[in-house]
Image: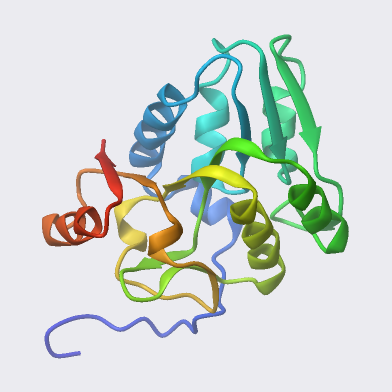
Length: 202
């Protein structure tokens, strides 16, 4: 359209996991490495589902005395044999393809544990509408994660900004830190920082 592009995909369309795992991979790898650098030995953290949070998990093998809670079978598989990590898997109903766990059991687990840091993924981020997701079941689990985290760290590549997905996760005022790539529009970064959000560009 004149002045820009409009996706023909609806807001509830979720790109398949395998497709997302190869998109912007180098940027996601850098985001994952930087996010992992914010994790201190002895931290309790929640790792959300997603291709970017999986990159965080891959960079945690040098850490010790961590407690990690996740609803992601991919992340659990990455960390299961790490001797310095106590791994808690949320349980719940498994979404095929995503290999994420959703439903009442998953929500209840995250309501019972108070963690130092949550590394949150999102389908879209918008200054006005906050972080949003394609799938309502995943979004409900993410909301439970946010409620019990001392620090919320949103990790997302720059292509997800200025977009809105189907259902809300959290508004921007509840996000403490955002880690993204250096292709983010500088105006967006400035506006986020003006909201009191710490922004890291990789």
